[in-house]
Length: 114
Length: 114
Image 1 (cartoon, rainbow over the protein chains, first blue to last red):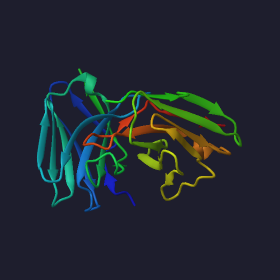
Image 2 (cartoon, rainbow over the protein chains, first blue to last red):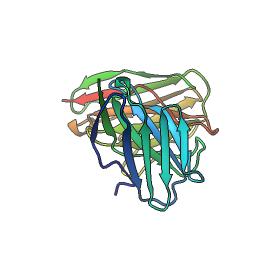
Image 3 (cartoon, rainbow over the protein chains, first blue to last red):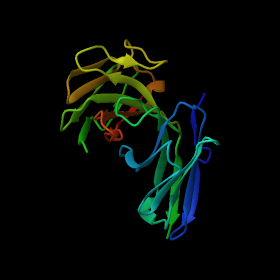
């Protein structure tokens, strides 16, 4: 049973437009959520996170929104750039320390075309 | 953030053989984890590598198949034993510092079993 779901395997967006990547989770014990970006032949790199006590966190072009009642989060990238083309993984954990483990979604491949 | 060196970066192995993957971190870290990403799937936690004691394995993973060592706070190995084609995956080392920082990943080992 997948506890973290990314239902869109891929997303295509034009440069300059907004990219919206979605993620749903089922485990109500999850308390901290992260987005990772992965380029081919590289490991995932941390992008942005949000605690369950917040509903929004912003870092430059990247904003993560959390709807805890719906168990849904989304990553907005504005404006999208070709260099953003990568696989984006949503991940969740029970707390924000390094001791708790991450549960990942299957990822969404984002393609930003010029 | 910690710099994680993982090797080999890729390998092609024959069925029935074993491969040991090394993970070296440039600083002492509290937590080290091993993940697997099968084709088209999410990252799945194999085990937590505990320094000086036996690793803690997730459901579906056993020590005989995936023996793990962690002799100190900067190094760990994962062995994939008696390999079959189903073991073809990307294996990723990740580290956590125990503070309020996200997990960081190595570049992974792409394993193909023929």
